[in-house]
Image (cartoon, rainbow, N blue to C red; front, side, top):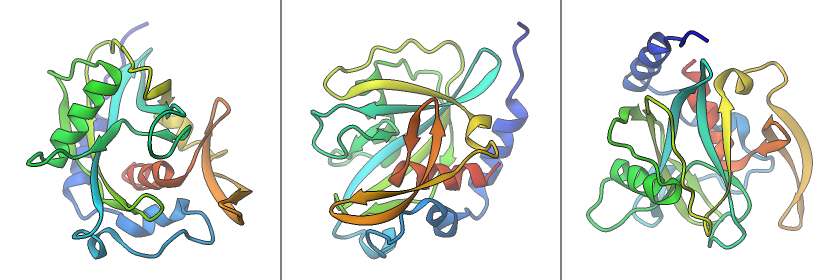
Length: 208
């Protein structure tokens, strides 16, 4: 199969990240209703915990893909959920550096050739009091994963076009902490991508 050149798409994403971002209105398209909280990231910058996550793009079999992981039941926060690789910032560390370090630690990836495209809007997660700061990046070549078994239960390799397919998003009523909520989610191969991950994805997909 002849390799597909995705440079035009990546350049468009990079330009979009440099322009005014879709921001909270795009994120709220994928928030459960009723909302778990109403505060935006700038209202909690001094009191929230800070985490960097990596929205990592790469090509495989001629398709531009996005990397997600399913967390194990042994992690402290958001057990069993689908998320971007990332974690809590170390003292003195930039949030971009946090996202890259945590991705290397969780997945054993060599990120020497990574191309940073930009940053999305931070998102506050009330249940854990974390504010996540997403960095978008592209990694060329074939990815060689060595996942950390205590943190990563599964690697989910999602083609971008599957997320923007007409079948997505979907909506279901779930029990969240003892109360019913209408939960929007992206579905891919039986995986339901919801919550903060879906909200970050909604803003990213708005760039496309």
